[in-house]
Image 1 (cartoon, rainbow, N blue to C red):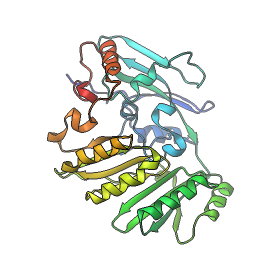
Image 2: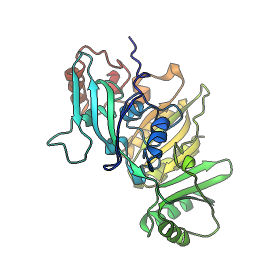
Image 3: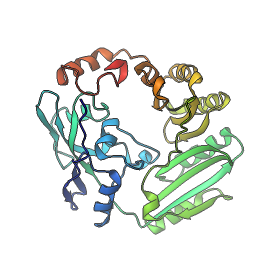
Image 4: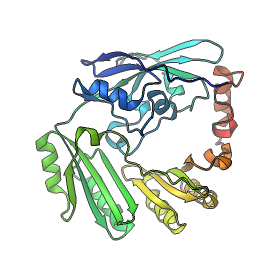
Length: 326
């Protein structure tokens, strides 16, 4: 049985004063962004074309701008949830200080639809900044890129994103700065010379910064979540294994890359040996087994199984799609 949220597209409430919006889960992020943009605010989530509010929340998906804005789990204040047995749950609300004890809604954000269906979501908004500038500089090696990134992270800067990319034109470091004219201008004046920069339009500030994944049958798009000090070693290992479109969010140990399917296992072992993990964001359909996508279950898997049994005892919600076949 399939359930669609394509009719759940209503904006329930836009509270400008509290900078929050409540909307149904099937609305496209781009559409929601357009609605709140008319009042000088925006949805601080990265998203690809067609991504919905519920989909972003269910996957807790985030990109490079999490450096400033956080993840959906950080931004979502309240949720309405439909369980497979017909129960309806409500968690949180529309202001930050409204939860006493454990926030039930956090269980469902990032659960990939395996516990229940998000039907309505309240999240924080941000005001439009006066100025947004994207700064890009090329480097000769990953060591140079890493050194430059850490100079920015440890310096008098407040980047919205900081991403290193392996492109056909060489290694690039992108830094984006948002804020008032004076603040952005001061930061740009402290950056290394020899770079390109351009002011972004409101339209360019939206959406995602990740390269489009390859779609051939031999490649998979991976996301490695690593301790920050291990990210450079993983990037170099990925490059040595003929990976393409490598993108490292330098404020964190998050690395995305297009990897040959046959090399996923070795790179996953490398990530796990560094104290991290590796998951698959896209892959050929015939390769999408739970173990390939998520890796082996961790020691807390028994707790995840208990949550599944409590909220979806009949196993009707996205069966077999998540870690360990949940």
